[in-house]
Every structure is written in structure tokens, then in C-alpha cells.
Length: 454
Ligand code: ADP
Image (cartoon, rainbow, N blue to C red; front, side, top):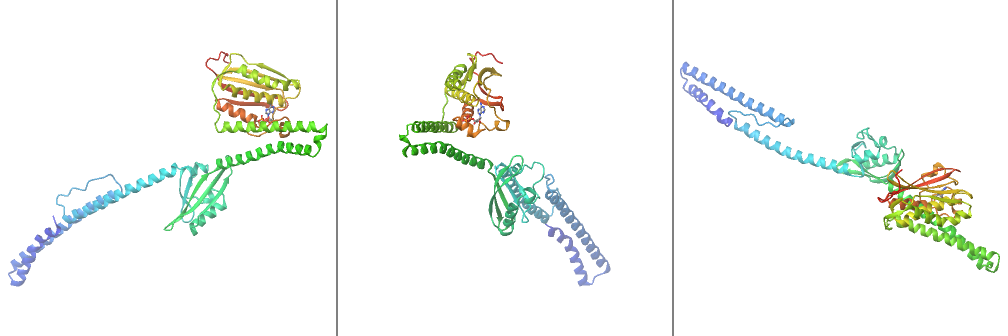
């Protein structure tokens, strides 16, 4: 019902009567009646105002409840709703519906952004115009090893003690300048981070920083550089010797009946060393790039050990060493026959090489905990504990001079490790300086192996 329509019928009679009385200057009763009618009209007006007030109050309370996010309620039921109030309520309803829809979109956007940020491998923080962190993702927390302390509300310097990063953030906030820097965080696991700091936007003060963990990348770069340096060094030594002796021969020593054969012998030895080095390098590179396709089959370990021992025996005997084998004939491994023999040959060659004259080299085979185990044990010079974890690295040698003098390339154990990995096996070492070493290899046991389980 429209408000105007409610008020007009109430006021109209009183106004008409009052006007007539005033015009006709009528009797007192009539004047009194007119006044009573007027008073009645005024009272009705008061009642209507009260109704309007109540409906508006109800509407206000209902609107407030919705704004405060209370449980959705339907509009209060009012018997004689005024049209203006109903119109106002309709407008509020439509505003509320629009706001709710926009809110839903904003909520979805915010959740999508959080999911994207937390799914990223890169760490991210966002700062306000003062450089205080106001937002970050999970990856950043992991990079900073900060599982408990809150990152938001902190200044860059409090999170990463690095002046250059702090300056970069302040430059982005104040001057809108972007910068890139790389820094290494010390700690239990040092990390190298590549960081890009940018201002947010012209009309959005603050900055954002994206952190890439490049630790592994830099490590691989170093490994590659070291490898190239090592290979160059290893190649240079025999090449220099070959060239030097060849030049001396050309310079006249060729006619020296005593020196010439010695020099040719050295040239031959060095060229053999070169070819061994190149062979080992090629083998390693094939293994690392997984180009080698191993033919897995049942390998009789006793036979593989016997063949490897036959190869090293002349050298061992020339040093007065005894090589003895204790590998049960029925012990069968799953592996590539050539690769298993190569592994045992490298281990036996080292055992003979690093064991002084008169020492012992023994090979034991067994089946332990469902795996084939072969131990190559020597009574040689042994290895200090600090070197044990590194001897399987390419070109790592405990004693460079001794290894080279003995014709070692520094790649033998690295090849052993890679070959075993390719066959689902592994290698371990135990050693005591001056007491000897034991290299133990593990390989999968063939189902048909008849060796007793230890
Ligand atoms: P190399 O060609 O120098 O022998 P390897 O990769 O085979 O290279 O071995 C790496 C290093 O491990 C050797 O230089 C040597 O110092 C040490 N090493 C390997 N086997 C033995 C062993 N049986 N006894 C003592 N030291 C060993």
C-alpha cells in the first residue's frame, strides 16, 4: 500500500471540515466536531508514522544481519507492507545479490592465486611500500628453512641477512627499479638463490621478489667445469710426455742406441695410458647417458671372478701376491656378464695395485638377505676414513702421485658404481689405513641360485 494513499484519506476530512468552519464562521459544536476530526486525523497520522518506523526498523535489522554475514534469513513478513518500504527492500536485495556475486568471484580469485603461488617451485614474497613482507608462498618458507616463525610483517633483512637484497627491495618500492641478484644462504644445507626484485605496479605501491633455488644448477656447473679441468689435466700429462720424447728422438736421440729404446718404451706406455683414459671416459659417458644397454641374465659369479682374477694374476704374481677365490659355484646373480666381470676386474686391479709386494687378495662370495654379495679383500695400504665417501667420484684419488705412477685413471671406481647402479646393485667400502680394504658389491640374486642364504 502506498504511503501517500494511507495518509490522504486520513487528512482530507479534517482539512475540509476545518476549512468550512473557518469560512462559515459556524456554531461552536461544529467547530468542536471539526477539531475532533482534525485530532483524529492527527492521531491516525501518528499511527501511520509508527507503522512506517516499525517497517523501516525491521528492514534495517534484516539488512544489518545479512551484511554481518549471519545465516541467510528471508525478509520479515509484514501484513500491510508500505510500497515505498517494499521498493527500498527490493533495491537492497538487488544490491546484496550483486555484492554476493562479486564477493564469490573475488573469493575464487584469491583462492586460485593462493593455490597457484603455493604450487610454484619458486619462492615469492610481496612487500608493502615500506618493504615489509605482506604475503609469501609455501616454497619461500621452505627455502628459508623457516617452518615456525611468521614471515609476514618482517623486513627483508630480518629474513635474509643480506644488504644487497634489502637495497634492491627498497629501490623497487621507492624508485620503481627492478634488479636481479644471486646469493648463497649458509646453514646446514647451503642454498644458492637467484632473486628477481620488481616494483608491483604504478598505482600499486610495494614490491615483489621471486626466488629461484639454483643450488643444484650451480653444483652441476661446477662438476662440469671440474670435469673438463680434470680431463684436460689427465690428458695433458701423457701427451706432454709423448710429445717431449718424440721431439728428443727427432733432435738426434733416435741414433742413440741406449736412450732411443727407453724413450720409445716411454712413448708406448704413455700412449697406452692415453688410450685407457679415453676408453674409461667413453665408458663412463655412455653409462651416465644410459646409452649402454645391459643384457640382464643369470651370471655365475664364480666364473666372473675367475676370469677377472686370471687377468690380474700376472701383475699380482710379479709382486709376489696371492689372489685366492672363495665364491660358491651355485651363486647366481641377475646382471650383465660383461659388466659384472668389468666390476670385479676393476676391484681386483685396485686391490693388486694398492697392496704392497707379498700381500694377499681374496674374493669371497655369498648370498646374504636375499642378495648376492661379493667381497674383494686386500691387505694393502688402506684408505683414511675422510676419503671413503669420495673415492667413487670421477678422478678422485687419495694419493694422486701414487695412483698415476701405478697407471690409474681415477675413473675405475666411478665406473664400478655406475655399472652396479645400472644392474640394480651397489658397492660399499670398509678400510683402515695400513691394514687393507674390503670392497663389497651387492647384486640381485637369481631365483635359480643354489647358494645357501646367509
Ligand atoms: P685409480 O685409477 O686411481 O685407481 P679408482 O677410481 O679405481 O682410480 O680409485 C680411486 C682411488 O681410490 C684410488 O686413487 C685410490 O686412492 C683409492 N683406492 C681404490 N681402491 C683401493 C684399494 N684397494 N686400496 C687402497 N686404495 C684404493
